[in-house]
Image (cartoon, rainbow, N blue to C red; front, top):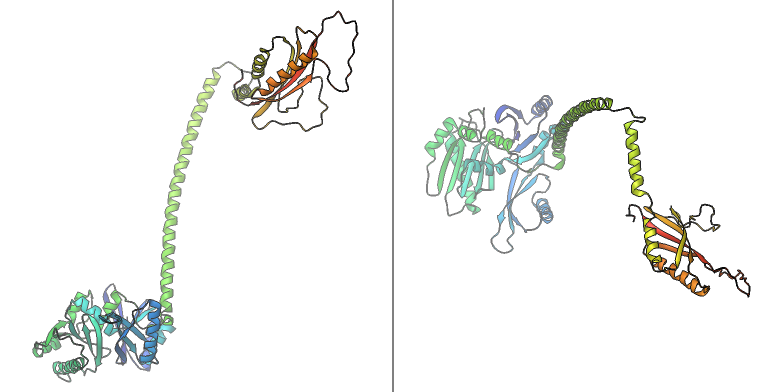
Length: 519
């Protein structure tokens, strides 16, 4: 932590809550050169810049209660009007007005002379030091009072700062209202208690003129000191109706703040440094270009953390995969041992069997093939059932011959000796289906020579066959008489002694699904 005062700067180094080192640099060429050298030799670490200078100004004001974007625009106009020529400004929100528009009450602070900071910030940028932010020491007084558990309405906090002087900060209801930095003579050159109380009286009159002190409660003057100076103050600070004094030892306060290794001194710089190092608040004054290296530092930490998590996750996943691989390998070895055991048992059992012309594996393949053929082999049971049902209604029909074929082509001819000359594309069966094609050669007995009735009977049989659910096609291949237009009829007028014969032929096509039960 770097504390920048009016004529010097102090670099505090902490290690696990303990004050490790404190380097003091004068605000001159020699001090700046020494500061450069110190930054070059020290390891890089995040650094807070704490400012305690006379050039810090405070303004009480109100702004409309608006959103974040509009709020920034309103504050930018306020800064341009009140603090012209400085980029270091900050706004503290301190509640809302009770009447009217209920505007926000704000405390506007600024470092009116940027050149008091630039000699110290330039070396930090040159050495790429990750600056977390630039902070105001008086603003941190609010946090110090909370840690000290001082809850009075009107509090005047007085501290001695090694880098600046006598700091007086007035807080009302725990909120900073105004702060003043006064010159403090060298300890021992003037009566300390009388000089300090004189400065307190000046500030009290100024506060009364601004009507900042609440009349409901007295002014609590909280003074931090140590040793003989604290004993001198105890003799001169007497409580009255309007003023109450609270004297605290700096060493005891440091212990309450968890600070270890602090030198026993009446200066309070190290207390604010400890507060800032323990819990870094949001930035007060720093611009984005002054904290760019801290942003990069945080990005590096995030990447390093992510890399570590990925490495740990990858190691864990690799370990699980390794354990799983070992388990699978053990299971494979167990399976191989079992396979060897059963193979030996199989060979022993096989040796006791009589010799066979083929291997058992080939027998199994043949058995599976026979089972498949048994399941899908075509059978004429359904066709014969249909024939029996239809012909039972025509007793004069005598079946002379039946030619049957199971095929995937609905146009196939069961007669092996002849083939159709039809050039049409064959009708193929769908997947899982085949056709049964049959040629029926039959005759009418007895037949009295009435050809018209015989033709009607054959057409009736064809219609009955076509009405069956699974019949796809029925065709009368031959009638009892040739009825084609180009055919001729011949005979004798005297008649014939031979009995008349009426023969005909039908062609049936049935569609059958694989696996259906056959009759």
